[in-house]
Structures are given as structure tokens and as C-alpha cells.
Image 1 (cartoon, helix red, strand yellow):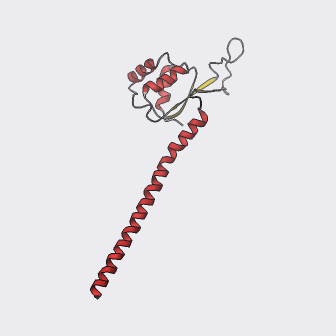
Image 2 (cartoon, one colour):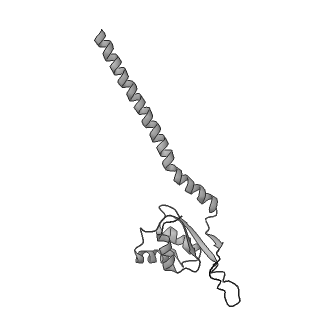
Image 3 (cartoon, one colour):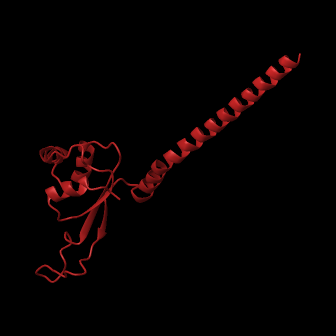
Length: 150
């Protein structure tokens, strides 16, 4: 009888330990999924907040150390703009090219894709917010998109 009771207590202790480990593992997995999903949530909120119309954001850019002006004495508007383009994770080269075409940096998405292929940058384009001057050359735009975005 004593042997039966001792084995029951030993089994129940193991059973309780297994239950505690299962609960702890479940809590860890549940919270880990929430924590790992947080950056995606922040990016989605920021994108929705800053780019609700899915149009590029242009802001005036002043050259504090260089006050070059055009012949009329007024800063050229094209020089005074900075384009910003947001690249989502997994965006295709064609989608990025279409965005750049929409803001007037390239004639077509195919032209952008061809330039990216020629530079061997198909897999080097980085996600995030990228800024470049409106008067940047096409090569400079591709180089800017290869740098990590903000």
C-alpha cells in the first residue's frame, strides 16, 4: 500500500511539473509572437499615417551652405525638393519602379528595372523610407535605394 501511494505521489509531482512547463511554454510563445509582430505594426501605422494617399511626399529643401539661385534670383523649384519613397518589405522591382515613375524620376517601371538589373542591384534594394533630391540622376536614385532606409 505504501509503495502504491509513493508511486502515485511521484507521478502526480511529474504531472504537475509537466503542466507548469506547458503553461510557461504557451505564455512564452504567445508573448513572443506579439513582440515579434510589433515592428510590422509600427511600420504599418507610420505608413498609414504619413502616406494615406500613396503619393510621394515632397518637402522643401534648403541648402544652408549653398545659396545658388537661377538667373532670375529665385531658387530653382526642382532643386528645392526632396523626394521620399517608402519601400515595403517584399516590394518587387516593378512596383518600386512604378512608384518612381509616378513621381517623375523614371520614364517607365521597365526603365528602372533595366537599370537595376544592369547595376546588379536586383536583391540589394533596401526597405524603408529613402530620401533623394529631385534633381538626382537615375544612378544616384538606385544607389540611394540600395542604402538602408529610415
